[in-house]
Length: 177
Image (cartoon, rainbow, N blue to C red; front, side, top):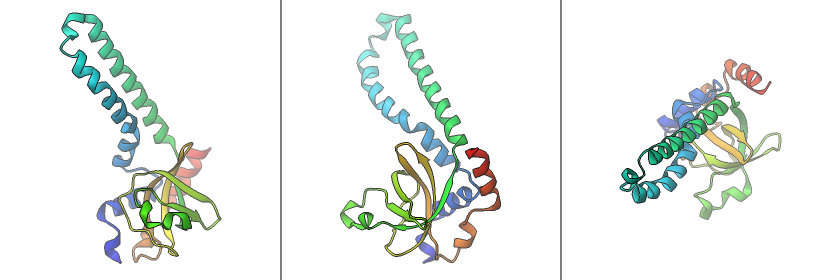
């Protein structure tokens, strides 16, 4: 059972239990929309790049404008996610998530209090989640749904060290007030 939690997941659990995102999680959240924007801009650069010399300063200013917009979006997201509270729940897999053929979707889980956690994204490494088993779950809540940060079986031998630390409650209180 000790092998079920990868070293990367352990690292994330230890950081999330303090109420913090790992550097990798934070970077992934900030740069997520940039990938889409860059994929959309790449054809424009390929098509108009050679012609940029003909446009001179206009092309240069347009390029700087695009970079400025990307920087502003990144800074806004960095500030937003730096202040967003990391949440914790002891949860089990919901019945609809247990269908094998939906393996690509992040799991939907139920907390002990009956809250439905629908994950729209996952930043956690893959972990096989089983029915009728409790899991320690760290997540963020966004308008589109929850973001799964890290998850581990509650009955794992190391589970006690992955539960929220004293600093977790202080950070949660600070970020929600």
